[in-house]
Length: 104
Image (tube, rainbow, N blue to C red):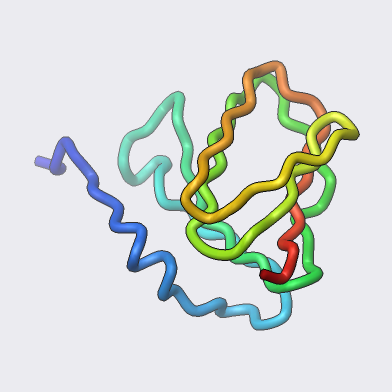
């Protein structure tokens, strides 16, 4: 039987190496393997100056947790600063979003 609880330790993600140096990288941390039907999770590594492309979320809520550094979330044409240790939630229906690492 699969364990009913999965524990993520943020320190392991802070130390995670980017397998695509110089480009942004994302890896699922919650999905089909964990039998998640209505919830997903990703860890994203953003090198300085490499944003997550502007994209559309349809009927999806999001929670952003910055583990290190600072970033800027572009949400419906307005910028929101994100710092390590802070969390930011977006209600659905979310429209156009993008994230850019500020290089700090």
